[in-house]
Image 1 (cartoon, helix red, strand yellow):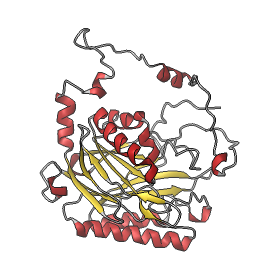
Image 2 (image 1 turned 60 degrees about the vertical axis):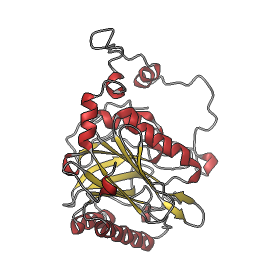
Image 3 (image 1 turned 135 degrees about the horizontal axis):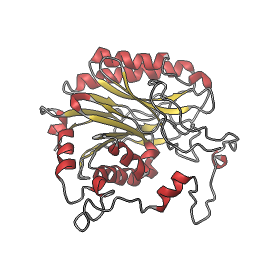
Length: 347
C-alpha cells in the first residue's frame, strides 16, 4: 500500500518522489550550470506534481552524467554554486531534496557524494560513496561512514549510492544506526537490472527497512540508463516500480511508524535483532558472539579470500594504477567535533 502514490497522505506518512532523470552529458562549466538549473526546475516540477510530497530524490550522476570525467573545472564543492542552487530550490519549493555531486578532493581523486537538504536549505546528511563501482569508477573511497539523519515527519533517513547497495553490510549499517528509509541513488545501466531489483528487496527485508531507489534514465548517445525507480516495503515486497520513461517521478507514501512497529513487535524474521541474539529460545538472550570469520579478519586487517582475484585496479577501464594508499577516516567536514569512525587505517 502506498496511499495511491502519496495522494492520500496519512498522519504518519512520508511521501517520496523518485526522479528518473534523463541521463545528461556534462563536459564544460556551462554544461554544469545548465544541468544544475535543470535539476532545480525538476524540484519545482516535483512540488507542482504532488502537493503532499515531502522529499524528492535525484539519481547518482544527475549533475555530471556517466562520462567519469574528473576534470577539476566541473567538480563541485559543498560551498559552490551548484549546492547553493539546490538549497535555494528546496527553500523555494518547501520540499526536502536528495542530490548527487562529484566533489573536488584536494588530496586525491574526487568523491562521489550525496546530500540530503531540508526545506530550510540546511544540509541534513552528507555522504561520500564508500564503494565506488570498480573497476569502472575513479572516485576516492568514502571515509565518513554511513550517516543517518532525521527526516520529514519524524522519519530517519540514510543514503547509500549505487554499488553500495550490492553489499549487505551497507544497508545493515544504515538500519543499525536507526535508518527507517534507506535511499539508494544510482546511474546503473540495463545489465544490472536484475541485481538492482533483488538487492533493493533484500536490503529492505533483511533490515526491516523501507528502500527507495532510483537510477538515471534514457541515453546520452553512449550509455543507456534504466530508470527503474522502486519502493520496497520492510517485508521485501515491491510497493511501486517505475520503468524506463525519462523524467517520470515515481511516488509513494512510506510509513516509518510501521517500520518501528515491526522492529519492536516481530518475532519471526526480525533478523537485524536476531543477528546478535542467535537461538534465544534455547539460551537466555541468545548467543551474543561474532561467529563470522570475515568480520574478525576485516577488523584485524587480515581479510583474505581463499581464491585468486584477477582484476584489482582500474587499468582494464583505462585508469592508471594508483600509487597512493587509503588515508583512513577523517572528521566530518560539517561536524568538525564529531569523532572519526573506528575504521582501520591502511598504511
